[in-house]
Image (spheres, rainbow over the protein chains, first blue to last red):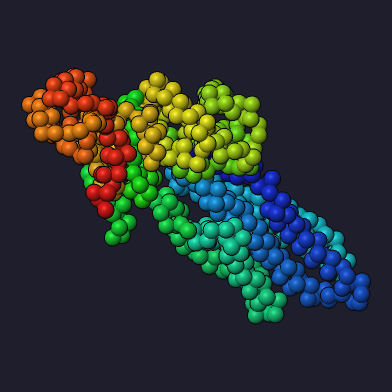
Amino acid sequence: MNLAKSWIIAAKDLKSFLRKRTVLYTVVVLPLMISVLLPLVVELTKQRGKGIPAASLPGFLDAFAFFFVIIPAIVPTPIASYSIVGEKIEKSLEPLLATPTTDGEILLGKFIAAFLPAMIATYAGAAIFMTLMDSVTYGTLHYLFYPNWGFALILLVLAPISATLSVEASVIASARVSDVRSASQLGSLMFLPFMGIYLAGEIGLITLDTNNLLIIAGVLAVVALALFRVSTATFRREEILTKWK
Amino acid sequence: MIQAENLTKKFGDLIAVDGVSFKVEEGEVFGFLGPNGAGKTTTVRMLCCLISKTSGEARIADYDVGKESDSLKIRKLIGLVPDNVGLYDDLTAYDNLEFYGKLYGCTEAQRRENIERFLKMLGLWDKKDVTAGTFSKGMKQKLAIARALIHDPRVLFMDEPTANLDPESSKTVRDFILELKKEKKTVFLNTHNLDEAQKICDRIAILNTKLMAIGTAEELERSVRGRQTVVQLAQVNDAILGALGRVSTGKVTREGDSITVDVLSPEKENPDIVRAIVGAGGDVQSVSISTSTLEDAYLKLVKETK
């Protein structure tokens, strides 16, 4: 596999996305909103009453941190959809497939183009979130809650897996629909299981501590591997030209 | 340069291309004529290693179509202008070509040189910084041709390159194909434009799932029906028909006061025909030569398969 070719494809896609406002908004606004709103909720709760008790706060913060698994599940879908369905609509896949690049190189290029902005947005949002959340919780906890091992696990393991799953789902969805919006909607369904995990954490069904996060990461990695096989089988020259809608 | 032997493609029970065999020489402009759904695009896609063949053999230069290790080498060797231009509308003409130049592994100098050369040849150099999405159909088609040539391929596959173009743009594309021929590039042209095929192709194959005929435009025309001399007379009688029977080796048919004589060489045979008619007392009003056209050949061959 020639990584340089994948990078050429990714660079071209990234250049195109910078011109698409709707995609840019999703990449920038969602992480920024979550990073600012969650600390704001904690601060407002504190200002309006007693606030969240120190004993309960770490549990809430662990659950809030899980939003940084949900963000990379949502952000790549419009990018991946534009990247693949957009090419399908513009009929630009055939000349691309006629170049001396392998299916894997093209798919990797598309993957990088969707994955990279999602991860940058997630990490930038996480930096803002940690700074703001630490500043609003320090008075209650008397120590800096972030960074911690659980959040490191989320950012370094779970978030990349989550983004990978999202891109894979978008590739599979792209083969079955013929417009960007439908592909984006189908791909974004990937965030539902993560939302389920978050809600389970909030209502106390599971604890989103480091041990459980490791188990979740393991399960998601297996799912990502299975989806990788499906997406690579979907993204084959012959499939694209003869079977894609 | 291109060789196919019993090339077949099936999609489930549907046979899209059925045992097609042909050879295309280097520097030849080869026309692939056929109605919609004849298998022209499928053949090109197989030859460009975009889809697999079901059976048969095909080679481009020294490489085997269908052999995994040769497919990248074949794709380096060829350029494809698909039926849908498939440009990146939000990129400029220059950036579209730059992207493909990079994917084909051209150096920066090669890219710069080829982009300038082809955009100038196709009259798009002034528009190099304009986004492709704002281009007219003709300009997009020209840009797609430049894209297919960016790596200086030895073989160019063109799928309906003048479809939906105005006459002026079509002529520019045709002239450009003839320029490529001068550069010894092999051009495989899918078309259902008979006039275009006749004007620019060295040889033509007529496809309707199966290969119906192959040859020069003249050979295909002759394959339907030979040349005929049509003589319009004031009145036809047995003496005239008898005289014609003695001078002509071809079939003589009468229709009213008109006689049609099958001839091999009208230039040589017509004076004898006219002399024989006049000698038999006939009044010749007009003499014309009737030949079958490529259209006749095409329609007859396509009809035969229905």
